[in-house]
Amino acid sequence: MTRFLVLSDGSIFEGRALGASGSTAGEVVFNTGMTGYQEILTDPSYAGQMVILTYPLIGNYGINDDDLESDRLQPTGLIVKEAESAPSNWRSNRSLDQFLKERNAVAIQGIDTRALTKQIRTAGVTTGAIADTLEAAQEALRQSSRYDDLDFVPVVSTPSPYRWGRSGKVSIDETEESDRVRLAVLDCGLKFNILRRFYREGCAPVVFPHSTSAEEILSWNPDGILLSPGPGDPQRLEPVIETVRELLGKKPMFGICLGNQLLCHAVGGRTYKLKFGHRGSNHPVKDLRSGRVTITSQNHGYAVDPQSLHGTVANVSQINLNDETVEGIEIPDANARSIQYHPEAAPGPWDSRPYFREFVETMRLVRA
Image (cartoon, rainbow, N blue to C red; front, side):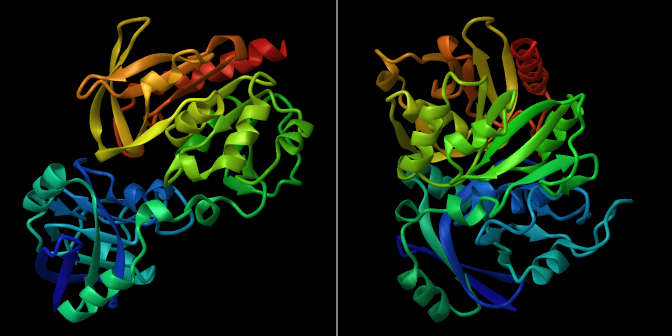
């Protein structure tokens, strides 16, 4: 069945149906990773966006029940060149098309994703809509809101606190494993693999809604605080920024992606929107102190303005070697640091995994 993608600049792409019927709209972005479509589809940082996957064949290893990064599909739409209908992998239990239909997600295939990506690289991210008819797609586009005008964190954050244990999510009331360090996680759009990595390093993570006060988090007496990734413009999160400001210096703090931007704003810095963002699994990042270069997994549309940190308590600690954007900041006096990329990967390289162990060791030292 024919399906249409329409962009706000008037561009029209005709393709074939994938996933559920209906219409959808969102900010159109691209991810250059060759694998990880299941993790991308369940990554809360993609809320409100339609994701182009530039690799031409998507779905060849199917869908499994183990690689979900949240409880639901997060992007508003998916755009691929070709979706494999007969996947082959020992863990697979359904195809990408079946998975999208189960979750009532609208997608499109048969699009020249390379040409579409080049268009976005030239003009920047744009709003788009997908529907079964051209008229329906144009109407969905007309009714859509600008991505920058919406708040997505309240939608993707957990509605209530929970613990993360050996088997995953457990009740906040479940007995804590006493030999583990206590990690408080401020959830602005958390990926499960972050919790998996911290648990494997000896943490007992407790996840709090984004609206939780600093007083409530500190009353739990954590050994450290994690600022999670998440979607949208960080400047719209002033209540969360104020919470981070109140927590700064009270406990060791580590921020990931949106957490890096929240930490920047908490000390008086600014962020800005990138032309087409960083979304992929091969971004080189240099640590300015050690000189070490790591290949990182990234998913963000905003970046820290380095000039805005002059005169604050924060220092730029890492940069992107492709475009020299800020990839990390640190506040030594407050025992706080953050990175703009995803050390948990899922998908992506494992170069940055040592950050989990380093932060856990920091928490142990402070507690001791």
